[in-house]
Length: 276
Image (tube, rainbow, N blue to C red; front, top):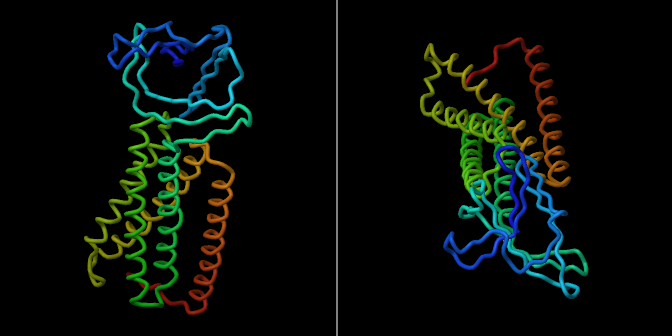
């Protein structure tokens, strides 16, 4: 059974007989499945497509192996394009449960976990160290640089996983993709800025500081927005929402507390803040 939504938004569900691998051997409206064509429906919602149909069998099914294949090309004249990804499960009709391949769910979880840990945990911690732990000189500098570098590498791996996932399922999530590319570009600029850092006595140092600080804040802000957006469009469960919400709350409470302490100390000492 093949389902798709045409360019005009009309849903189509057809049975195809897979007589071979050649396109001419995949024949529409042929096959061994007995169905009621009036009960078929297709629904596309963001990155997911739902296909519903009813089949009639001579006897009650207990367990049945099911193969899913998916692609992004709309069939023309009932000719199917090669699918871009596939997965399989064994469905137990007696319990309503299934087991089988985790692809592409495994790749989606990898993409989400890497990006959440990198952009949502490590990089904010590195930024916190840079702003509030400068009394640990020079340890804070090495901690900041090391954590940010590891976070960027993991984040880059998460982006690569996302690109691979998009190539498999062609997910229609332009906002999530666009923000991801934007955050990655800003992250690359931050890495490049590290190698172009002027000396402390340079007249350009304060401008570099402004750039580095504010671009870093933009990276973390838009990364947080994109993580929330990714959890939403990816259909992640409540555990992801609660976990990231708890992480975000801890980070915000920590930042607010440390910021109050910094400003209180600065007000008492009335001294200029150090630069790096």
